[in-house]
Amino acid sequence: MSEDHCELLCLDLPRAEALRRSRLDVGAAAIAAERQAALADPTRLTVTVALRDGGELCVCDLAWVVERSDKLVSHHMRRLRTAGLVRARREGKMVMYSLTAAGERLLAAALGDPQEARP
Image (cartoon, rainbow, N blue to C red; front, side, top):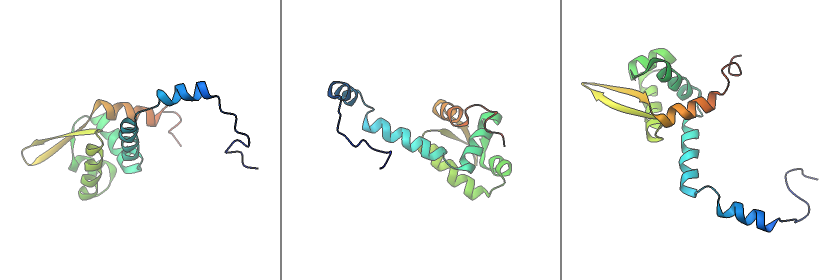
């Protein structure tokens, strides 16, 4: 016997239909899933914490903080920017990154209680 499914069809049709009509839009679900996937990497998570704590930073600073190459950090920043979690602006030859409001909210949700994140 599997505990993952019902063995008897017992659909509460009015309730299920009401939930079906009000379910999350497919497009909104795709955006939310992409944002969460973008943050679901230890390096990207560490980079977003550095942006939260340090404000606007360039790739060189972020690479130093996370102890990764600037090319790898640039790749991660592109993923975070595409997901709408960070914004970028050019300052001369440097690109400066900062968290968006969506990035701040998702980071807070991902980290939860700071005491739980400690080993």
